[in-house]
Image 1 (cartoon, one colour):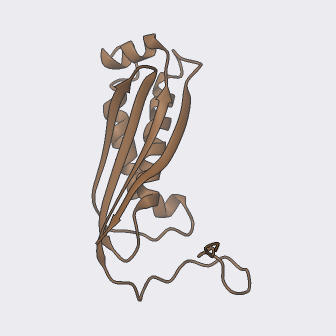
Image 2: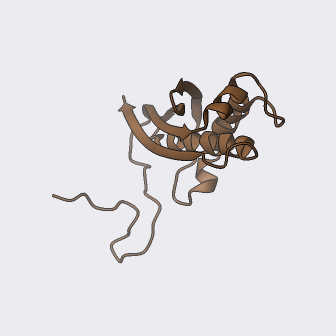
Image 3: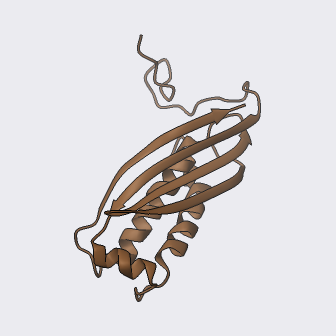
Length: 149
């Protein structure tokens, strides 16, 4: 049985989901992504060798800021009181794996905030490295965990 789209009203018009009857509970979501980089770009990131500055620190801040702006960026998202957002990086053989976790006490989940943080962190890395690496690929941005209660 297919699930119904929650942002459609009975008449087919777009509608923000009414969560006013839902209980305020603890919610956590984690998203991951990947950015493929050339070996020299990875070296430059690890040695702070890029003229634009510290790539991972800047991408972390950008991801956190983006999570806080999700409702502004995505029209039907609820404005959520975020308790915590983390953005982490792991060097892998062909670039970096990114992971963002968002936490809230609210009536709806924080999946979009975690996905937005991951996406914007990767885009920030791309922006900071584009002068030295024309072959970057951002991929595999996906929700990996959603916990409520």
